Length: 317
Image (tube, rainbow, N blue to C red; front, side, top):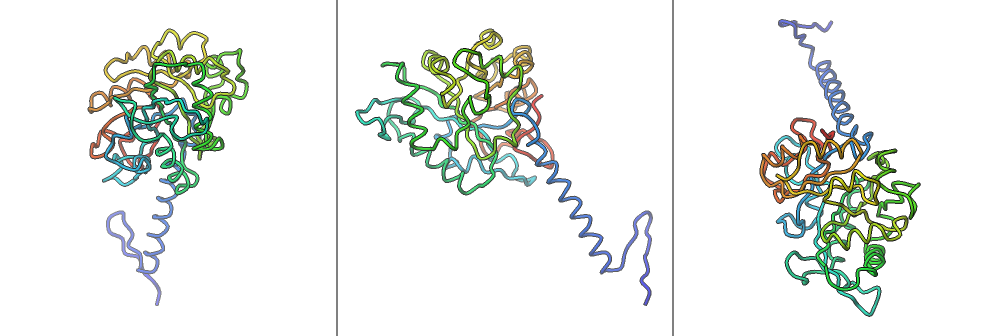
């Protein structure tokens, strides 16, 4: 028997077998389209995108840390977690054994708390369970302020190497091969921009925040061999030749002109304490790269995507 096609309005109704094939084709095309859109962000450079970060990640209810990194593309769940950045507050405790796990602990108000290794282990577990994952930003907020800061750079780098692994870390030199101890990271960033996301997968970027003296010393002491970046809270400093290329500012304090000028120089901008929808929207529309919030879950505004297909990265505004 010859198959017939019934037309209602502008819609053709196909026989069941052909209809199934037609639906499968439509579904396949839609799937390929959404996958293309969702993965296109890998073609963008790091300074061209914006992403969500948790603030004081160790204090969030979403535990272990990997839960905060899990991305959910569904329309009912896209704003829950999906972070591509974390933050850990660190304290140094000098030890006689240079390889002791007790060198650094994580806590906010006191110098107690779990070993930093405890959280690095969680990153390793998530990394192992998510092959091909996006690059993850980790802010290390330096709470220590007393003692000899001159030994701090080597102590921290040794710790990260011992308990995370050098092969999982994207260092400044890894990202900017022309970096030396005498030239300026800010000049390289402005001239070349940051690497593409596709070149940064399965890696972690560490950036020091917190105590200005310690992070500044770290950034300026043999920068070509350091494992971490360091941020700065001065726009004028970052727009002059210097060893840093990351801006850090509290939500509500940022100025559109500041972020615009930093964006033009390919400087990354982290806005933290974005714990309400107005602060979040302001940070994103003014050109932040990293938006750090306590509201990791259950707040629909706490996402860089606003419509399907949802993504963990969007273009920086």
